[in-house]
Length: 622
Ligand SMILES: Nc1ncnc2c1ncn2[C@@H]1O[C@H](COP(=O)(O)OP(=O)(O)OP(=O)(O)O)[C@@H](O)[C@H]1O
Ligand SMILES: [Mg+2]
Image (cartoon, rainbow, N blue to C red; front, side, top):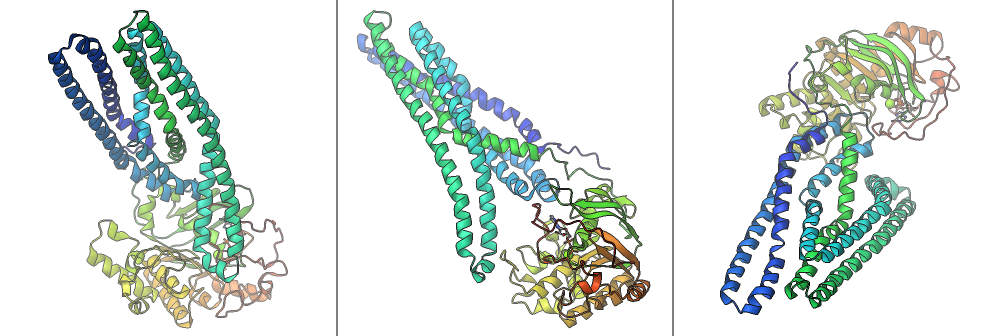
């Protein structure tokens, strides 16, 4: 096992590594704030020294000092910004890849949380170079101005103190009053955007079914709620902002009045009157700045909290012991999968063993759990209980990236990525260190084996045909299926999990698939596939009948067929070119035909509204 130190919480680790940057930025902020005093001191000197003495030379010297100081001030300000920029770059370098790994590799968070994590990260990175961080760095230096005010005259110091306390109270009040609302509105907005994105993707269906009005209505209801909440927040923070402005102007003028009164009483000089007002204004500025940037500050704080919680999920990049390439023994022990957020079982207490080189077909009615089982076997979905072992090692013990190279998985909905066909089949391997000629060879081998090669050559740009993000990506369902099959076959995997690989194939495609299975058997690959068609069963060794998440029967094909026919029950609907053509009642008795939309995308984390009946009847199998 490689002893590389992997960050447990990449965000905290990266922020810790930026500590030096922040420390220097803090120090520069101190100097910057000291230099901020220069114009006030200059004014004081001009009024008190230059004017009464008509000292032109003094004015020149003072002006020179002022120019140099302001130059240094500007330089420090620029350096501070650069430091923060570097911190943000370092954050990106240290944490971004790990967070992306978690987003793509973890099963422990919802799709929404995962989609949000990178945005949170970018919010944080953006905050590091935005006005909010400057306000935060300036705030601790406000006491300097109060002390200087005190030095001008204790009464002015007291006024500055009272003003700061009052303005800070207003800032805290504003934060308190809007915090919950802002976080809630942000969550709602994220959800609303996701909903809208989904509607946009599915707008074809919506157009055909006359759903546009209803969908617009639905989104408008969500939007109205968000707008209402945002309005409430804006109203509240508007009041606080107005109060701040009022207090600042008031205190600045009061400082002037107090200065004048003190000057009348000969306690301070005339120049100090204006200096007092200027310094007090400066003392209050950070508070006002923070209040102005409050939305950003709060957004950043929420982003930090959410991302920090997300980063507490197990690190998927922790290096694992490299196990030898799998031979293809698939074992399952006491495997259960429940619907997320409830305890309704989709698979309950399943156990079996598939030897290396065996070809097994999963059959059973819609909703039996075939796809779910294939997802768990391939590691796409985490089991709630029990183990899946490949060559004796639990999936958790495998280096998943390494194992993935020996696995071919084809989901029921063959999701292809918005990239060209070659990139899709080669599993984006070009982004790693694979040589192009090796890749080309492997891609063409896989495509040929899947029966996709000739078909791809007829695409407008052949293997370079770009698939887009819209549903289908520009291919027919059957074309998609063979490309996805080619992707599953890429790199000569030893274990293949194919979810209804023939669902959209024509007769040619189906016989090609049979030939592929024969080749895979020759190569000694283990194959688990699900199907609703009986034709393909000719090419398998064993059949497993699933129903209601349990194994009803599992055995050698011929034996299985015999006992099925003895019970006057066929394992699946009669072969036909259209799946589900025969009613499931023919397969599994009166209540076996649970309907389920086979095209539904199972990759979402949100449980769909599905039938939640637990059937206990055991008829239908053996
Ligand atoms: N992400 C999910 N969240 C909640 N329930 C799910 C999820 N995916 C599947 N299910 C439920 O699990 C059960 C099994 O679904 P699965 O997709 O495994 O069936 P299947 O045997 O593949 O059906 P089909 O032949 O129609 O493809 C169904 O009752 C379904 O409602
Ligand atoms: Mg399925």
